[in-house]
Length: 87
Image (cartoon, helix red, strand yellow):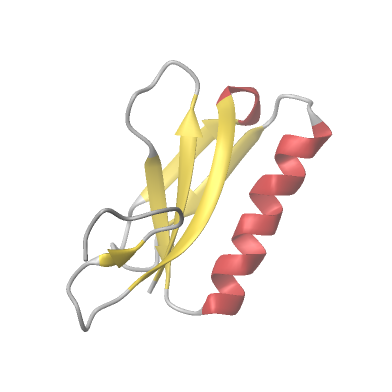
């Protein structure tokens, strides 16, 4: 399972959707990144593959960042980008 996480302007908590396949997650990441690069406000609608019926609509002018990471089922946790203080 892959998580696509969006950081929003004036919001301390990110919003996220999940994809089952890496190719699908990468395509969504590129779609959001492309919307950020265009710089013109438009509505972007996303849906989650894990939680059926979960839909998210966000105005691209309120997006600050997007990241993708793998959620590992074996360890029960997530493999997030960046550094970890855990051993």
